[in-house]
Length: 432
Image (cartoon, rainbow, N blue to C red; front, side, top):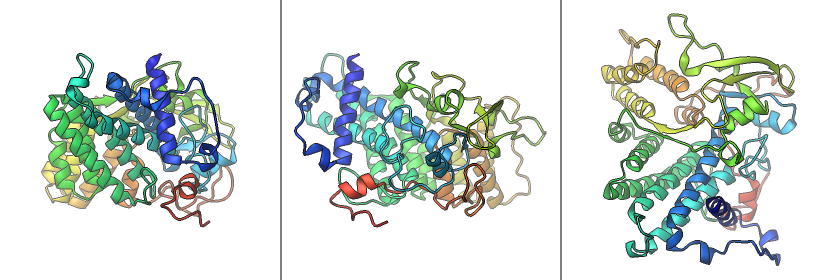
Protein backbone atom coordinates (compact mmCIF):
# COMPACT_ATOMS: atom_id res chain seq x y z
CA UNK A 1 0.00 0.00 0.00
CA UNK A 2 2.83 2.35 0.88
CA UNK A 3 4.46 1.63 -2.49
CA UNK A 4 1.23 2.71 -4.23
CA UNK A 5 1.33 6.06 -2.39
CA UNK A 6 4.99 6.48 -3.33
CA UNK A 7 4.12 5.87 -6.99
CA UNK A 8 1.33 8.45 -6.89
CA UNK A 9 3.55 11.01 -5.19
CA UNK A 10 6.33 10.49 -7.72
CA UNK A 11 3.89 10.85 -10.59
CA UNK A 12 2.52 14.08 -9.12
CA UNK A 13 5.94 15.62 -8.51
CA UNK A 14 7.31 14.64 -11.91
CA UNK A 15 4.19 15.84 -13.74
CA UNK A 16 4.41 19.22 -12.07
CA UNK A 17 8.04 19.45 -13.19
CA UNK A 18 7.12 18.56 -16.76
CA UNK A 19 3.94 20.54 -17.26
CA UNK A 20 4.46 23.49 -14.93
CA UNK A 21 0.91 24.72 -15.44
CA UNK A 22 0.87 28.28 -14.09
CA UNK A 23 -2.92 28.44 -13.73
CA UNK A 24 -2.87 25.50 -11.34
CA UNK A 25 0.31 26.08 -9.36
CA UNK A 26 -0.51 29.74 -8.71
CA UNK A 27 -3.61 28.79 -6.69
CA UNK A 28 -3.50 28.36 -2.95
CA UNK A 29 -4.46 24.80 -2.18
CA UNK A 30 -4.57 22.63 0.90
CA UNK A 31 -4.32 18.87 0.86
CA UNK A 32 -3.86 17.24 4.28
CA UNK A 33 -3.05 13.91 2.62
CA UNK A 34 -0.35 15.26 0.33
CA UNK A 35 3.07 13.65 0.58
CA UNK A 36 5.83 16.19 1.23
CA UNK A 37 8.93 15.98 -0.96
CA UNK A 38 11.01 16.69 2.15
CA UNK A 39 9.77 13.52 3.82
CA UNK A 40 9.45 11.46 0.65
CA UNK A 41 12.96 11.88 -0.75
CA UNK A 42 14.95 10.50 2.17
CA UNK A 43 17.49 7.66 2.19
CA UNK A 44 15.15 5.38 4.11
CA UNK A 45 12.81 5.39 1.09
CA UNK A 46 15.51 4.71 -1.50
CA UNK A 47 14.23 1.29 -2.57
CA UNK A 48 10.59 2.43 -2.60
CA UNK A 49 11.49 5.47 -4.68
CA UNK A 50 13.23 3.35 -7.30
CA UNK A 51 10.33 0.89 -7.30
CA UNK A 52 7.97 3.80 -7.87
CA UNK A 53 10.04 5.11 -10.76
CA UNK A 54 10.05 1.66 -12.36
CA UNK A 55 6.27 1.43 -11.92
CA UNK A 56 5.88 4.83 -13.61
CA UNK A 57 7.90 3.59 -16.57
CA UNK A 58 6.04 0.30 -16.86
CA UNK A 59 2.69 2.12 -16.96
CA UNK A 60 3.99 4.56 -19.58
CA UNK A 61 5.52 1.74 -21.60
CA UNK A 62 2.32 -0.28 -21.90
CA UNK A 63 0.50 2.83 -23.13
CA UNK A 64 3.29 3.54 -25.59
CA UNK A 65 3.06 0.01 -27.01
CA UNK A 66 -0.63 0.44 -27.77
CA UNK A 67 -0.48 4.11 -28.79
CA UNK A 68 2.46 3.74 -31.13
CA UNK A 69 0.90 0.60 -32.58
CA UNK A 70 -2.32 2.48 -33.21
CA UNK A 71 -0.56 5.44 -34.84
CA UNK A 72 1.20 3.16 -37.31
CA UNK A 73 0.19 -0.26 -38.62
CA UNK A 74 0.07 -2.73 -35.72
CA UNK A 75 -3.39 -1.76 -34.47
CA UNK A 76 -6.48 -0.08 -35.91
CA UNK A 77 -9.23 1.86 -34.22
CA UNK A 78 -12.46 0.02 -33.36
CA UNK A 79 -14.44 2.66 -31.46
CA UNK A 80 -16.77 5.24 -32.98
CA UNK A 81 -15.07 8.38 -31.67
CA UNK A 82 -13.64 11.32 -33.62
CA UNK A 83 -10.60 11.54 -31.33
CA UNK A 84 -9.87 7.86 -31.91
CA UNK A 85 -10.33 8.26 -35.67
CA UNK A 86 -7.72 11.03 -35.69
CA UNK A 87 -5.28 8.92 -33.67
CA UNK A 88 -5.58 5.94 -35.99
CA UNK A 89 -5.57 8.05 -39.17
CA UNK A 90 -2.30 9.83 -38.26
CA UNK A 91 -3.87 13.29 -38.04
CA UNK A 92 -3.53 14.08 -34.34
CA UNK A 93 -3.96 17.68 -33.21
CA UNK A 94 -1.46 19.06 -30.72
CA UNK A 95 -4.11 19.50 -28.02
CA UNK A 96 -5.15 15.83 -28.15
CA UNK A 97 -4.96 13.62 -25.07
CA UNK A 98 -1.85 11.74 -26.27
CA UNK A 99 -0.03 14.77 -24.84
CA UNK A 100 -1.91 15.31 -21.59
CA UNK A 101 -3.40 11.97 -20.57
CA UNK A 102 -2.10 10.19 -17.48
CA UNK A 103 -1.95 6.47 -16.74
CA UNK A 104 -5.52 5.27 -16.45
CA UNK A 105 -8.38 3.78 -18.42
CA UNK A 106 -7.74 5.81 -21.60
CA UNK A 107 -9.51 5.35 -24.93
CA UNK A 108 -6.71 7.37 -26.56
CA UNK A 109 -3.40 6.05 -25.20
CA UNK A 110 -1.38 8.76 -23.39
CA UNK A 111 2.21 9.16 -24.56
CA UNK A 112 4.03 12.38 -23.72
CA UNK A 113 3.09 13.09 -20.10
CA UNK A 114 3.35 9.44 -19.04
CA UNK A 115 6.83 8.99 -20.52
CA UNK A 116 7.93 12.40 -19.24
CA UNK A 117 6.64 11.52 -15.78
CA UNK A 118 8.56 8.23 -15.87
CA UNK A 119 11.71 10.01 -17.00
CA UNK A 120 11.27 12.68 -14.32
CA UNK A 121 10.67 10.11 -11.57
CA UNK A 122 13.78 8.13 -12.47
CA UNK A 123 16.00 11.18 -12.92
CA UNK A 124 14.84 12.69 -9.63
CA UNK A 125 15.56 9.51 -7.71
CA UNK A 126 18.88 9.16 -9.51
CA UNK A 127 19.94 12.64 -8.43
CA UNK A 128 19.06 11.93 -4.80
CA UNK A 129 20.87 8.60 -4.80
CA UNK A 130 24.02 10.36 -5.97
CA UNK A 131 23.68 12.90 -3.15
CA UNK A 132 23.27 10.24 -0.47
CA UNK A 133 25.99 7.93 0.87
CA UNK A 134 26.15 4.17 1.29
CA UNK A 135 26.13 4.66 5.06
CA UNK A 136 22.72 6.37 4.85
CA UNK A 137 21.07 3.41 3.16
CA UNK A 138 18.76 1.10 5.12
CA UNK A 139 20.20 -2.35 5.94
CA UNK A 140 20.51 -4.55 2.87
CA UNK A 141 20.00 -1.73 0.32
CA UNK A 142 22.77 -1.33 -2.25
CA UNK A 143 22.89 2.32 -3.34
CA UNK A 144 25.04 1.61 -6.39
CA UNK A 145 22.60 -1.05 -7.59
CA UNK A 146 19.72 1.43 -7.23
CA UNK A 147 21.67 4.03 -9.21
CA UNK A 148 21.98 1.52 -12.03
CA UNK A 149 18.27 0.72 -11.97
CA UNK A 150 17.14 4.35 -11.88
CA UNK A 151 19.52 5.30 -14.70
CA UNK A 152 18.41 2.34 -16.85
CA UNK A 153 14.72 3.18 -16.59
CA UNK A 154 15.39 6.86 -17.21
CA UNK A 155 17.24 5.75 -20.34
CA UNK A 156 14.28 3.65 -21.55
CA UNK A 157 11.86 6.52 -20.98
CA UNK A 158 14.11 8.75 -23.07
CA UNK A 159 14.66 6.29 -25.91
CA UNK A 160 10.90 5.90 -26.28
CA UNK A 161 10.47 9.67 -26.26
CA UNK A 162 13.12 9.88 -28.98
CA UNK A 163 11.54 7.15 -31.10
CA UNK A 164 7.95 8.27 -30.62
CA UNK A 165 7.96 12.05 -30.32
CA UNK A 166 8.69 14.49 -33.15
CA UNK A 167 10.43 16.65 -30.53
CA UNK A 168 10.50 16.68 -26.72
CA UNK A 169 11.70 18.67 -23.73
CA UNK A 170 13.31 17.77 -20.41
CA UNK A 171 12.66 19.69 -17.18
CA UNK A 172 11.30 22.82 -18.90
CA UNK A 173 14.38 22.88 -21.12
CA UNK A 174 14.52 23.72 -24.81
CA UNK A 175 12.81 21.77 -27.56
CA UNK A 176 14.99 18.77 -28.38
CA UNK A 177 15.28 16.83 -31.61
CA UNK A 178 15.11 13.01 -31.47
CA UNK A 179 18.90 12.85 -31.89
CA UNK A 180 19.34 15.09 -28.86
CA UNK A 181 16.93 12.94 -26.85
CA UNK A 182 18.85 9.82 -27.89
CA UNK A 183 22.05 11.45 -26.64
CA UNK A 184 20.36 11.96 -23.26
CA UNK A 185 19.23 8.33 -23.28
CA UNK A 186 22.74 7.10 -24.03
CA UNK A 187 24.13 9.14 -21.14
CA UNK A 188 21.68 7.44 -18.76
CA UNK A 189 22.51 3.99 -20.13
CA UNK A 190 26.25 4.70 -19.82
CA UNK A 191 25.70 5.51 -16.16
CA UNK A 192 23.53 2.44 -15.68
CA UNK A 193 26.15 0.15 -17.21
CA UNK A 194 28.86 1.57 -14.94
CA UNK A 195 26.76 1.27 -11.78
CA UNK A 196 25.32 -2.17 -12.56
CA UNK A 197 28.81 -3.48 -13.29
CA UNK A 198 30.11 -2.13 -9.99
CA UNK A 199 27.14 -3.61 -8.11
CA UNK A 200 27.43 -6.97 -9.91
CA UNK A 201 23.77 -6.58 -10.90
CA UNK A 202 23.61 -8.69 -14.05
CA UNK A 203 19.91 -8.17 -14.71
CA UNK A 204 20.22 -4.38 -14.76
CA UNK A 205 23.47 -4.59 -16.71
CA UNK A 206 21.76 -6.59 -19.46
CA UNK A 207 18.81 -4.20 -19.47
CA UNK A 208 21.11 -1.19 -19.78
CA UNK A 209 23.34 -2.77 -22.42
CA UNK A 210 20.39 -3.66 -24.60
CA UNK A 211 18.84 -0.25 -24.05
CA UNK A 212 22.11 1.35 -25.11
CA UNK A 213 22.31 -0.93 -28.15
CA UNK A 214 18.81 0.15 -29.17
CA UNK A 215 19.77 3.79 -28.67
CA UNK A 216 22.98 3.42 -30.69
CA UNK A 217 21.01 1.86 -33.53
CA UNK A 218 18.72 4.91 -33.42
CA UNK A 219 21.86 7.07 -33.54
CA UNK A 220 22.97 5.30 -36.75
CA UNK A 221 25.86 3.48 -35.06
CA UNK A 222 25.03 -0.16 -35.88
CA UNK A 223 28.49 -1.61 -35.28
CA UNK A 224 28.72 -0.12 -31.77
CA UNK A 225 25.14 -1.20 -31.12
CA UNK A 226 25.98 -4.76 -32.11
CA UNK A 227 28.93 -4.82 -29.70
CA UNK A 228 26.56 -4.16 -26.80
CA UNK A 229 23.89 -6.50 -28.15
CA UNK A 230 26.40 -9.36 -28.40
CA UNK A 231 26.81 -9.30 -24.61
CA UNK A 232 23.17 -10.18 -23.97
CA UNK A 233 22.66 -13.80 -22.89
CA UNK A 234 20.05 -15.98 -24.57
CA UNK A 235 18.07 -16.26 -21.33
CA UNK A 236 17.62 -12.52 -20.87
CA UNK A 237 14.20 -10.91 -20.76
CA UNK A 238 12.92 -7.89 -18.82
CA UNK A 239 9.16 -7.53 -18.48
CA UNK A 240 6.57 -5.32 -16.87
CA UNK A 241 5.01 -6.24 -13.56
CA UNK A 242 1.25 -6.77 -13.57
CA UNK A 243 -1.74 -6.42 -11.27
CA UNK A 244 -5.30 -7.54 -11.98
CA UNK A 245 -6.85 -4.64 -10.02
CA UNK A 246 -4.63 -1.56 -10.41
CA UNK A 247 -5.23 -0.20 -13.93
CA UNK A 248 -1.72 1.28 -13.98
CA UNK A 249 -0.29 -2.23 -13.81
CA UNK A 250 -2.69 -4.07 -16.10
CA UNK A 251 -1.72 -5.25 -19.57
CA UNK A 252 -2.94 -2.25 -21.56
CA UNK A 253 -3.12 -4.18 -24.82
CA UNK A 254 -5.59 -6.62 -23.29
CA UNK A 255 -7.51 -3.75 -21.70
CA UNK A 256 -7.74 -1.73 -24.93
CA UNK A 257 -8.32 -4.57 -27.40
CA UNK A 258 -9.78 -7.63 -25.64
CA UNK A 259 -11.67 -6.01 -22.79
CA UNK A 260 -12.86 -2.61 -24.05
CA UNK A 261 -12.73 -3.16 -27.82
CA UNK A 262 -11.22 0.27 -28.46
CA UNK A 263 -8.76 -1.19 -30.93
CA UNK A 264 -8.19 -4.25 -33.08
CA UNK A 265 -5.17 -5.89 -34.68
CA UNK A 266 -4.56 -4.14 -37.99
CA UNK A 267 -5.44 -6.13 -41.15
CA UNK A 268 -1.76 -6.07 -42.17
CA UNK A 269 -0.93 -8.23 -39.14
CA UNK A 270 -3.74 -10.75 -39.61
CA UNK A 271 -3.21 -14.13 -41.21
CA UNK A 272 0.55 -13.81 -41.64
CA UNK A 273 2.10 -17.07 -42.77
CA UNK A 274 5.49 -18.72 -43.18
CA UNK A 275 6.95 -19.72 -46.58
CA UNK A 276 5.42 -23.17 -46.18
CA UNK A 277 1.95 -21.65 -45.75
CA UNK A 278 1.65 -22.37 -42.03
CA UNK A 279 0.47 -19.64 -39.68
CA UNK A 280 3.35 -17.60 -38.22
CA UNK A 281 3.28 -18.15 -34.43
CA UNK A 282 5.13 -14.87 -33.85
CA UNK A 283 2.05 -12.90 -34.88
CA UNK A 284 -0.75 -15.25 -33.87
CA UNK A 285 -4.08 -13.43 -33.64
CA UNK A 286 -7.69 -14.42 -33.03
CA UNK A 287 -10.80 -13.22 -34.82
CA UNK A 288 -13.43 -12.81 -32.11
CA UNK A 289 -16.06 -12.00 -34.81
CA UNK A 290 -17.26 -9.26 -32.47
CA UNK A 291 -17.98 -5.92 -34.14
CA UNK A 292 -16.46 -2.71 -32.81
CA UNK A 293 -18.47 0.50 -32.75
CA UNK A 294 -16.38 2.05 -35.55
CA UNK A 295 -17.92 1.40 -38.95
CA UNK A 296 -16.81 -1.94 -40.40
CA UNK A 297 -14.48 -2.84 -37.53
CA UNK A 298 -14.13 -6.39 -36.19
CA UNK A 299 -12.16 -7.20 -33.05
CA UNK A 300 -9.05 -9.26 -33.70
CA UNK A 301 -6.93 -9.88 -30.59
CA UNK A 302 -3.19 -10.62 -30.26
CA UNK A 303 -2.64 -14.09 -28.78
CA UNK A 304 0.57 -12.98 -27.04
CA UNK A 305 -1.42 -10.90 -24.52
CA UNK A 306 -4.34 -13.15 -23.45
CA UNK A 307 -5.08 -11.72 -19.97
CA UNK A 308 -4.98 -8.49 -17.95
CA UNK A 309 -2.01 -9.88 -16.04
CA UNK A 310 0.09 -11.07 -18.98
CA UNK A 311 3.50 -9.42 -18.74
CA UNK A 312 4.78 -7.29 -21.64
CA UNK A 313 8.43 -7.62 -22.71
CA UNK A 314 10.48 -4.43 -22.36
CA UNK A 315 13.74 -5.87 -23.66
CA UNK A 316 14.84 -9.39 -24.60
CA UNK A 317 17.54 -11.42 -26.31
CA UNK A 318 15.69 -11.71 -29.62
CA UNK A 319 15.87 -7.92 -30.01
CA UNK A 320 19.62 -8.06 -29.37
CA UNK A 321 20.10 -10.67 -32.08
CA UNK A 322 18.12 -8.65 -34.61
CA UNK A 323 20.28 -5.61 -33.81
CA UNK A 324 23.32 -7.77 -34.56
CA UNK A 325 21.69 -8.96 -37.79
CA UNK A 326 21.10 -5.37 -38.90
CA UNK A 327 24.67 -4.38 -38.12
CA UNK A 328 26.05 -7.39 -40.02
CA UNK A 329 23.89 -6.59 -43.05
CA UNK A 330 25.00 -2.95 -42.97
CA UNK A 331 28.61 -4.15 -43.03
CA UNK A 332 27.96 -6.51 -45.96
CA UNK A 333 28.36 -9.61 -43.77
CA UNK A 334 25.43 -11.62 -45.11
CA UNK A 335 26.36 -14.92 -43.38
CA UNK A 336 26.62 -13.09 -40.05
CA UNK A 337 23.23 -11.43 -40.53
CA UNK A 338 21.60 -14.73 -41.50
CA UNK A 339 23.12 -16.48 -38.49
CA UNK A 340 21.60 -13.90 -36.14
CA UNK A 341 18.19 -14.12 -37.81
CA UNK A 342 18.22 -17.91 -37.57
CA UNK A 343 19.35 -17.86 -33.94
CA UNK A 344 16.06 -16.12 -33.15
CA UNK A 345 13.99 -18.28 -35.49
CA UNK A 346 15.37 -21.40 -33.82
CA UNK A 347 13.61 -20.42 -30.60
CA UNK A 348 10.22 -20.55 -32.34
CA UNK A 349 8.57 -23.92 -32.88
CA UNK A 350 7.64 -24.46 -36.51
CA UNK A 351 9.51 -21.41 -37.88
CA UNK A 352 12.03 -22.65 -40.48
CA UNK A 353 15.53 -21.27 -40.96
CA UNK A 354 15.94 -18.34 -43.33
CA UNK A 355 17.87 -19.14 -46.51
CA UNK A 356 19.57 -16.11 -48.06
CA UNK A 357 21.29 -17.94 -50.90
CA UNK A 358 21.82 -15.54 -53.80
CA UNK A 359 20.43 -12.53 -51.94
CA UNK A 360 22.07 -9.12 -51.65
CA UNK A 361 22.74 -7.20 -48.46
CA UNK A 362 19.75 -4.98 -49.29
CA UNK A 363 17.47 -7.99 -49.59
CA UNK A 364 18.73 -9.37 -46.31
CA UNK A 365 18.14 -5.99 -44.68
CA UNK A 366 14.56 -6.03 -45.97
CA UNK A 367 14.16 -9.46 -44.40
CA UNK A 368 15.45 -8.10 -41.08
CA UNK A 369 12.77 -5.42 -41.20
CA UNK A 370 10.16 -8.14 -41.64
CA UNK A 371 11.73 -10.24 -38.87
CA UNK A 372 11.51 -7.27 -36.49
CA UNK A 373 7.93 -6.57 -37.57
CA UNK A 374 6.87 -10.08 -36.65
CA UNK A 375 9.15 -11.03 -33.74
CA UNK A 376 8.72 -7.71 -31.92
CA UNK A 377 5.00 -7.31 -32.67
CA UNK A 378 3.32 -5.05 -30.09
CA UNK A 379 6.50 -4.53 -28.08
CA UNK A 380 6.95 -0.84 -28.88
CA UNK A 381 9.46 -1.04 -31.75
CA UNK A 382 7.45 -0.58 -34.93
CA UNK A 383 7.07 3.22 -34.86
CA UNK A 384 10.79 3.65 -34.18
CA UNK A 385 11.65 1.28 -37.03
CA UNK A 386 9.43 3.15 -39.47
CA UNK A 387 11.10 6.44 -38.59
CA UNK A 388 14.66 5.12 -38.37
CA UNK A 389 14.51 3.25 -41.65
CA UNK A 390 12.20 5.59 -43.57
CA UNK A 391 9.66 2.83 -44.20
CA UNK A 392 6.56 3.59 -46.23
CA UNK A 393 3.41 4.40 -44.29
CA UNK A 394 0.56 1.93 -44.65
CA UNK A 395 -2.02 2.93 -45.69
CA UNK A 396 -0.33 5.75 -47.58
CA UNK A 397 -1.10 9.36 -46.69
CA UNK A 398 -4.15 10.59 -48.60
CA UNK A 399 -5.79 7.15 -48.69
CA UNK A 400 -9.47 7.28 -47.77
CA UNK A 401 -10.05 6.51 -44.07
CA UNK A 402 -13.10 4.29 -44.29
CA UNK A 403 -13.44 3.82 -40.53
CA UNK A 404 -14.30 7.42 -39.77
CA UNK A 405 -14.18 9.55 -42.88
CA UNK A 406 -11.52 11.80 -44.35
CA UNK A 407 -8.09 10.52 -45.31
CA UNK A 408 -4.96 9.20 -43.62
CA UNK A 409 -2.50 11.89 -42.54
CA UNK A 410 1.27 12.17 -42.80
CA UNK A 411 2.31 11.91 -39.14
CA UNK A 412 5.16 9.53 -38.39
CA UNK A 413 5.60 10.74 -34.80
CA UNK A 414 3.66 12.36 -31.97
CA UNK A 415 3.95 16.17 -32.19
CA UNK A 416 5.15 18.15 -29.19
CA UNK A 417 1.84 18.82 -27.41
CA UNK A 418 0.44 22.24 -26.60
CA UNK A 419 0.74 21.55 -22.87
CA UNK A 420 4.53 21.67 -23.24
CA UNK A 421 4.76 24.33 -25.91
CA UNK A 422 2.50 26.81 -24.09
CA UNK A 423 3.71 26.27 -20.53
CA UNK A 424 7.45 25.84 -21.12
CA UNK A 425 9.12 29.29 -21.10
CA UNK A 426 12.07 27.93 -23.08
CA UNK A 427 9.95 26.84 -26.06
CA UNK A 428 8.20 29.10 -28.53
CA UNK A 429 4.44 29.21 -28.01
CA UNK A 430 1.86 27.37 -30.06
CA UNK A 431 1.91 28.60 -33.65
CA UNK A 432 -0.94 26.65 -35.19
